[in-house]
Length: 554
Image 1 (cartoon, rainbow, N blue to C red):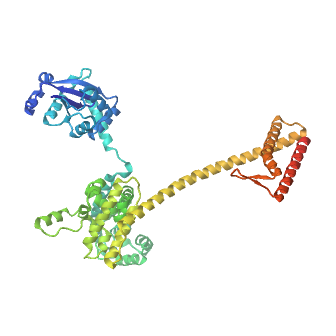
Image 2: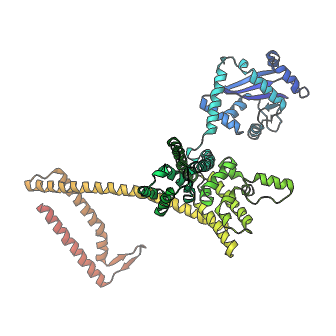
Image 3: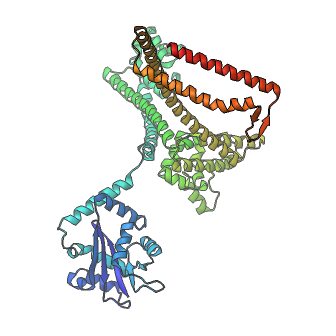
């Protein structure tokens, strides 16, 4: 049986025929030994056909299709043209060797061409790759390398493409930096307290907050120079005038030692650095909040920005978190405790990073495990909605949060919560109403603009109409009647004649004493109706005479 080999290069598709190889003699070691020698390999494998790609974009599309295990139309046409045709109801007398079993199964499904992918075929493809530039005559020495490099860059660039607004990597970096900043600020502020306490030890007991302590230390500088004039400044920093007075009183009777000016300058500089770091930490937290609302709005509204970001960073990405089942998400962050429990055959942990959520803190000690399991379930739903939905809304997260609140009430008070199906239906309806409101607003703005344009055009036409009337009146007064006015009069006469002709049969029927219905039936009229019809006919004749007199006078 003949064996054809499909090779997908960076410059095009190539089809080789491996002839003179029996199934018994398909030894991979023998093939490995004959790979390096082109003379030996060229006798076994020969090029049948080569189909170059039209452009770099075409090459990228073909590469993407093959990596996903799909056969394109170009590849199908290439195979059907160059492979022997299979007769209906008969087995093929050849096989097609491919590198990937996925693409082989897709080819055999659509074209019924038998494909195989094994070690022997892979060794043949490796040797083809090694000597490919020798098989094709028109290729220059550096062309194949350039094509491979260009296709490799474009393929990797296409794979790395993402939505800039939904990059979870930024959240991972931000939460790591936030945690390290918290540790650094705590250690630095402790160092400031310890350093400045040599000079003013009583200040530690008065000011507990680290950031405010650094501010006060920078403001006070030397305690011997602290007087009542500085009480307003201290009150602004602390927000409490009593504390400011207490600091001034404590400075008068302080037990601390005096520091040299150089030492005080260093303490102030270090306090300023601590203040800058704490301010930067606030900005970083705001940045994290905005990023989390963009990337995972439902998870954020359910569990909070910090815990949500920690879950994403621990899982590696939002996609990985969405792929996790709720049981894994529940103990995410407690891996050491889990494996320790499995090793010692003890109790497994009930929660990991989820423990930092306020819901578990609010639950009683008896219900903490239940609450963690329920919250993990809702977090997995929220993360999947955030990852795979195209709409960027936090409605589902808010509804899931309401469910968790109801579950807490159920554990504490016994109030039955709503079913998940009803809550999700309500969430979907609210999203649809929001979308409808947006569409209505957009349509409203368009309608308002159209109305304004119509009003403008109407006003312009009315102004033009008034001008025309004035011009016509002047023309009549001067005795100069334009030909356009005469044409209009003729049109009016014709319309009046047509109306009279249309009314004439009705009048005749009335005069004869008959009335025609919509069904086509004819009824005889009463005497009163006949007299009414005669009077109406006489009135119409009088109106006609008046019209003809008016036109004659004009």
